[in-house]
Length: 116
Figure 1 (tube, rainbow, N blue to C red):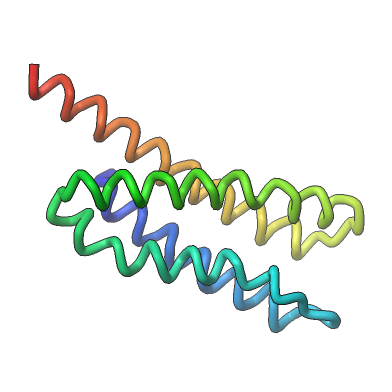
Figure 2: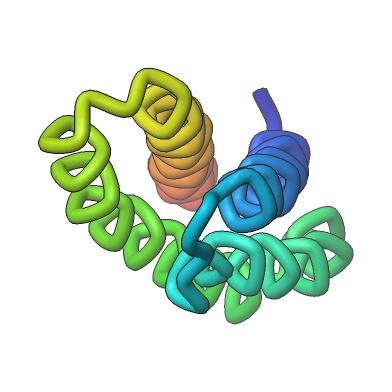
């Protein structure tokens, strides 16, 4: 999968599932919107990814890594609460983020091979 497409899908999932988690909560926390903001940032970076801009690709990778790391704590909280819906949402966000990250890494490896 092309990195720009993987990142676009990830961004959309982060936005939708983040909003669902925020508005579906009985006690919404502002921190639940962090994936939404990250998704919006990734959406803005997507055009540069499509044009294979290296700087934008590296920024997108950093945002993607931060999102993946940042979703660990919400997953632990959802597991502690035994909240199946929250667990599902966070696992889906983590999976899509991991797929996007793998896509970026594969793209960087391929670019290095083609350069040599």
